[in-house]
Image (cartoon, rainbow, N blue to C red; front, side, top):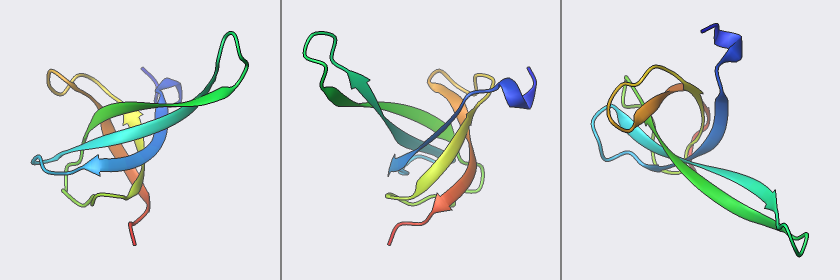
Length: 84
């Protein structure tokens, strides 16, 4: 699969307790089917962090990749903003 066709997401690191793995929470807004209000929904992705550089609260970009383990199908592309 070409790199342009792979899915990319931007999210917040919520856990970095595993070795070379992080959990990234990606937030999206979905319109309620009846009431029309936009509701925030969060999806958590497990991503591969080869250098263990991410900290909790960092804003990161992740990209879809081949399955690396049972739950890991994403990898870290770059850290957009470090936590304060």
